[in-house]
Image (cartoon, rainbow, N blue to C red):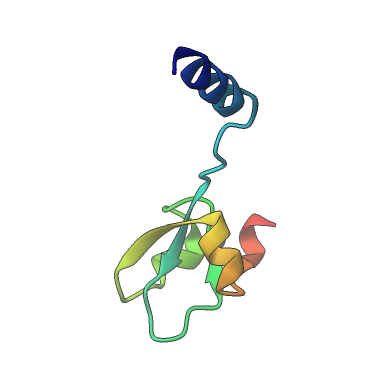
Length: 69
Ligand SMILES: [Zn+2]
């Protein structure tokens, strides 16, 4: 059991979970995600700004906002 835990810890260390958080305007049909929550592109958002992971953003076929490219 100890060996298993050690192996688990080592694997986690080698491959840290990539949880990059990005920001999306929670409008009805968002198309862009933002790396910073104070991005100019988000200042126009009249809805809530939500945090999602980059993985989720890519699954939802969102694109990085033009200002931050
Ligand atoms: Zn942006």
